[in-house]
Picture 1: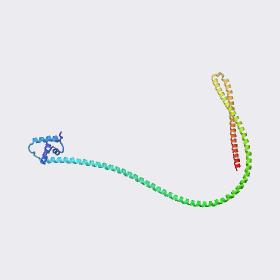
Picture 2 (picture 1 turned 60 degrees about the vertical axis):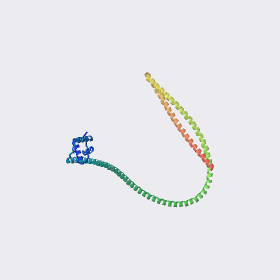
Picture 3 (picture 1 turned 30 degrees about the vertical axis):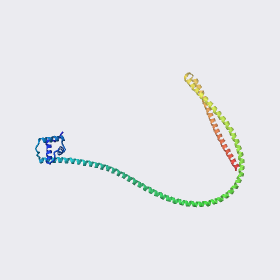
Picture 4 (picture 1 turned 120 degrees about the vertical axis):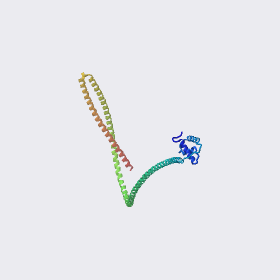
Length: 320
């Protein structure tokens, strides 16, 4: 289908312009002359009609031919310019995108370099601080080394002085050893007398220990009897308490016997108080017996330790 503006007259003008330039008016040439517009079938149909209608050589109008040529050239120039502009615009956009991408990369790299620079500056400052600290430590170590050298010299002098003192002490020790030997002879005679005296004391303490053990067994039996009495009284108290509880229930059921039961209750309460008093007395006696028992056991242990010490002392003196 032919486009709007393509008609038989335009095809004829294009054909005449081609003929004026001594070019063959083919379908493709006419279409190019028309500015690449119109379908080839329409151009072919118009060319056939013109060929059948005009057997004579066509007359060419120069102004119309120039106008058609200029129009075709302007269209071609405009199309080429639009293509060039579109290509330049696409290339400019690509260049601008590449520039923006490169600028982002450079910006990120510049930030990384700034951070690295700041880190290096910070490390340099820390290194300077460490260098100053190491310098101070080096000075302190040098002072300490001088002090140690002075102390070493002082210690050497002290060692020499101590060597002289040790020599003097060895001489004194020899004299003291001779005096000690004389003292040992005197102490040996005194220890023999003390051993005889300690053996008499040991025998006396052993007899006292046997007496205390017998007393402890008697008090242990009394304590067991007190515990049995205490358990018996506690059982009686529980029994009396149960009886009182039963009587109280009976009193609640029988209001007419209130006075008699009240008297009995008072008597039982008095008996319970008496039993409680007896229990308290027995508890106190039991506590005293327990304390006496503990004291007797402590005395026995102390006497046992004294006997062991005396045996040890006798053994050591006999060995000497």
